[in-house]
Length: 259
Image 1 (cartoon, rainbow, N blue to C red):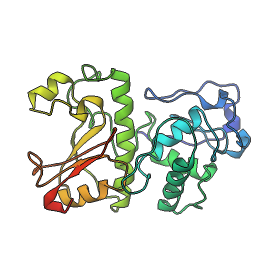
Image 2 (tube, one colour; image 1 turned 180 degrees about the horizontal axis):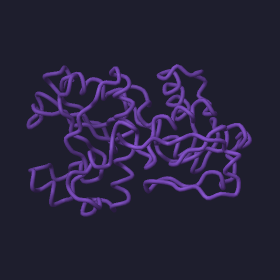
Image 3 (cartoon, rainbow, N blue to C red; image 1 turned 30 degrees about the vertical axis):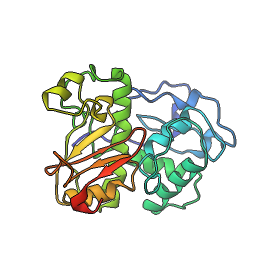
Image 4 (cartoon, rainbow, N blue to C red; image 1 turned 60 degrees about the vertical axis):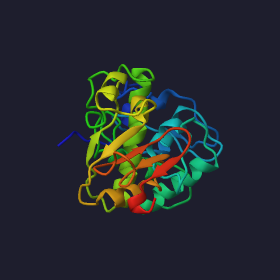
């Protein structure tokens, strides 16, 4: 079992340095409050990955919003994808609202203590969601190098992919989702016969095994969770897995699944 973050009183951390896992987190307690933010005392727990220091709502901006957007990336609405840009606009508000509703929280689109505490429960110390790991999303090499983007960008893209998969997993009854692979360097992609423009080389993609859900159920569910590329049964070379990816544009094709 992987380690889980332990919540404790934020006031006990005054003046102390926090340790953060992964490459995309930063120390939010030292950041200036976003517009409309509540006081730090409104959030009663701290987290080993990232801690929000106040309430976020439409109109807020900055790193705290960007970190929130990563966690709710799997709730953009059918066929949509939210930008991870640090600007809390209508699309982010809608995603936060769907996240809240999915977990039985007050669904008002305002991210406060209850929303953040749920996120803390869902993430590990390295900022990955509790049911997915960096290792699952990279079976090519150990340092995320050699793709079409920098290693840091590929790893950051994979983190967003994992949070989308976490949302999809929850929507499908919290049954495990099997990830057969994700990021590929250019050489790894060539070795497996991947497309020259494969989104695997950007860290955006994951290939899913049938698991208990089946390929078609996975492909259909992916439409609701921020995946702009879905390839499955009936699409050449995809009868033995469902491929999901983020990134620009949209291309869905799983003819045997009605997609």
